[in-house]
Image (cartoon, rainbow over all chains, first blue to last red):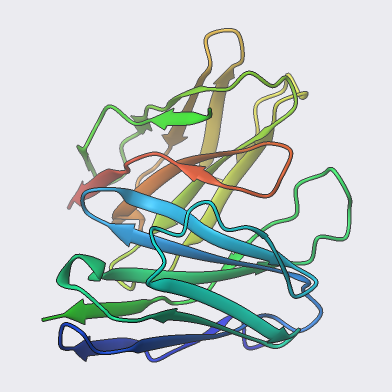
Length: 117
Length: 113
């Protein structure tokens, strides 16, 4: 199993540009999570999906951020327009969610380091 | 609201010694899970150990063990026989109900040879 795959691993862009981060969850997992890690705020959940449906997007910082999951094997996190304060490491994680009401381990991808100049 | 607090931004320990990382949390629920994650310089988030709140017995995983004090809402991680490869950021995390992990600010652990 390849684990959670994220691309790109590093992204450098200029303020105002559109940025798209990609994630491929582990096959068979039906929950997907997007986290952001910064020095100031630590690790925080942005949004998560169950069976491709967004369940909770309360962590999305503002309308410049959007996430989609068109199918069970792919998700994107888009920032448009990007700002320097969006610079962070963005993690994608997936879990099997087989047992309702119980915790299912989240497996993290390697992260995308985004730098907005 | 759930909160997780790690009061030690940095810790260091001599190789082969034992170190304890502290974590306190706050939740209004009685059913939840607690975790310690390790993040080495590679940035990969690695689950080290987890504890179900309904279990009184402290979880152990080889050299890693926890001291779970539910009434005090404390969840410390003990690393025995520290190894150079243990050097990393360690995050305490909480989850309840929905699948939202809430993380502490992290503790940077340095292992001195």
